[in-house]
Image (cartoon, rainbow, N blue to C red; front, top):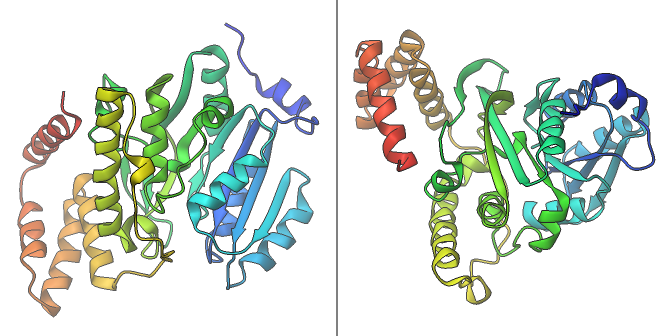
Length: 333
């Protein structure tokens, strides 16, 4: 088995055609942007280009990018009018030269060996179209509060019921992405989940047990500030996936979503702390979760917080049992 070694990737670091294109889309993320970029520049695998699409930011994002791109010739920056993440991702990938595409959100972090592990696997498994692993969850101050690493024996089947990947730790073949027509731009949210499902229908997919980076629990991130919108879109995406598996096609051509582009909008502080407490409890850090719940209940009674607080008094073995049962049900196997 021919492995992609650190030595030969360093020799090819500045080759005319990079093996990997890391694509990042940015909209008003000046606080975390430099950390995300730095995590890519510190990769053990070096034969990559970093394509960053500034989707019409109005903060200091453009200024930061124009400064950073001077420091490394592998960084390519594109400034464009605001069209939303999906259209910007397609734009970025259309300008990518790599055989493989790695995604990274502008507030997330990749661990140093992320690209190395993913490239080796794809190079040695030509029938695999998509891979991804797990991620440590971090809060807005970079503290690790948990880990999201869904394990499944049948990733294609489980993917139909839940998104098993974080966008910031996936890598896929550009040829497969292009053959599928890229991200479907009617989906302003959940376009990644739709793509993973469509890739799973034409190629093998793999879910690694490795934790490849850090996924930020960002109060202004789409996963939380636009939670209800994302849940509604996910239902449609799952419906379309079942249609394709039953009929060979879906109703996307006639799909008419809301056309307005929605931007990030921070959720309130209490809602954010509830999310943090939930992830801490999932990591069996009961005292930390309990302290947050008590603080919240002092200010305002909430049944959701009360239930969460009650759960912090359960023994760890029972919490683990409940989590195992929940995952079995959600993975549907």
